[in-house]
Amino acid sequence: MSLFKYRLGIAGTGNMAEAIIKGILKSGALSSPQITAFEKNPERSEYIELQYKIKFQPSFCDLVTNSGHILISVKPADIVSLLKDVKSFTDLSNNVFISIAAGVPISFYERMLPGKAAVIRVMPNTPALVQKGMSVISCGRHVKQQHIDFVEKLTGSIGRYIIMEEKFQNAATAISGSGPAYFFLFCRHLTEAAKKLGIDSENAARLVAFTALGAGKMLDKYESDADYLIKMVASPGGTTEAALREFESGGFAGIIEKAVAGAYNKAVQIQDAFIDKSEE
Image (cartoon, rainbow, N blue to C red; front, side, top):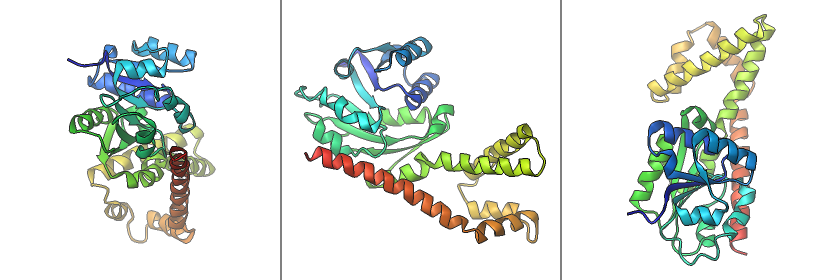
């Protein structure tokens, strides 16, 4: 028999947390009575409770006391004050803490939480909102196989996942975590280019969106063999080849590498700040 009333407690119910709730319920991984939450914004908690029939706890301590698995989905800046609330607990060895806060290392949680609490770090991305997310999972020192099984079920309900060592989390943040915005930016400029060629806004947006969707499905089908797919589209001496030549001459590869490095360095900066805090 479980020690806890709820299987999953969610601290912070923003867009990503809502995507996870929606995915869990839609997949049948958990039911509404098995989930509870804590949220400081009363309007947000009222919306989530009405929309998904989930009960809310009056404090983070109540959430931890009543929930086996704790999903921490608050902003990184709010993590310290949140965890201070449970410092008086003598033992959290029966709880599993699942963090989706970008840049916050597992070691920070392990130092801040009393006992031998199991900590799993997950980096999902925004396509989770349409159950097409990509999540990266990393495990702490006290994690057991049943904990991993639960998190795999959780992330599998919102898309796909891979398990990697935590040292790759910042790189994953720069690629899959921030990556959707890179594609959205490219699509915005492609849409603007279509409009300059005389296509109306609605049709330009539709052309770009479904081109992106189809390209993504092809990448999935052909196991991300981008070189092969480029050759499939780009006939020698054709229109695509002319466009690709412009990308290359404009330093497209270098721009991408510089952008990803910027995201990665920011993730490292956030992580280092939390390492410093945990050592104070």
